[in-house]
Amino acid sequence: MIPVIKVEVDNRKLGYSKKEINALTESGYIFLAKKWHSDSLKKHFTAAGAREYKYPARTAKYNKRKQKKYGHQEPLRFSGELMRRASLVRDITGNSKGSKVKMKDLPKHTFMYWVSAGGPKKYEELVEVSQREEVTMKNDLEKYMADSLNKSVRSKFISVTRGGGGGAVAIS
Image (cartoon, rainbow, N blue to C red; front, side, top):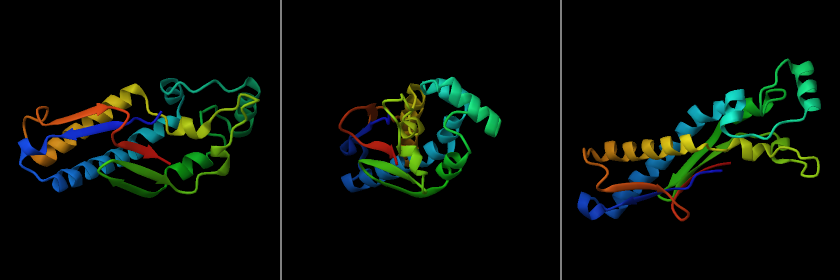
């Protein structure tokens, strides 16, 4: 699940124009996307990450084959190619509505899954955000915007909430 984080700023109380607030919101979303890529992405390739993001269990046959061939049973990792490519960022873009991380040349198999065989949805697992991370992202964005505005009382003027219609940090 990719969180939708909505930012609402009462720019009249702050004395900034809507254009200035939009520029600040855009830089905040880009900040979140970079932070997700540098901090959270690595956890997806660990056993602790698999528990946190609630990945479905792989078959015993698959785990045995992976252990024999590569000597590990880490999630989302067979040969390590997905992990290597996902760590390379091609582009991070944003606007006042959200941001997007484009990872460089993800392997084709990342987007394939076999529903009939109960295969994992690897791409969905790769971009999953836990509830704990969602709260951290919300707090980081609020702090980033407050620090950028140089205000000590941030909660009166800026509200960052989870909502369906606001901006989003999207990963692709």
